[in-house]
Image (cartoon, rainbow, N blue to C red; front, side, top):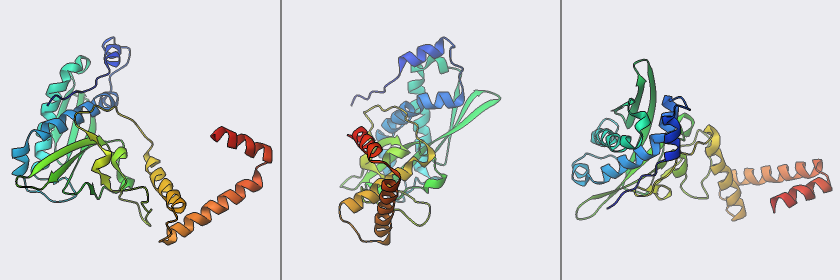
Length: 256
């Protein structure tokens, strides 16, 4: 199988000309997705080692073999891709458990810390982490464990914000949500993707869209659906009261 990794060569040339100062954060945003992709690719080749691990559903076995294997694969991945980033030749990466925690050393007095989240499960949709404490921009690798005469392991990767949410009718919760991680929303390891940064609270839009979708589809199985209907009606009523016919027509035309 041939794997490809997308590199923005123009950005590399700019850094080589020293027009942009190198920082740990700048570095991580540029290399995190190629590094995560290559790590997932290497993990997918280690089927024998993966079958020998002790697994538990849902989490990453943070102190066990999967995290250790992930760190070893990330180290190998960095050795593979760093030749594509000559401007970063003096930067050192250290990989440690749990998950794949990364220390980015620009020099002896300048460290930045990053992480690649590891998920695993036999199901394509598994419980995720508590969203309030999570960096939704962090890269994530999902190992799907497939049962059969000989167990096999399929990998996908993405940023966390790309893979959360079980379906279009998810209900919000009366505490900080733990949205599901959905394997099918992630990217195959042979497809390069770019880093996309989103605001910390961007995940709320998913639940807002789900709430409206449930009403539009006539799903009313919870007090949350009733609450959404009341909020929608009140918002519309208040908007109509405060908006002139001319302004309403103008805003409507902008949406078409």
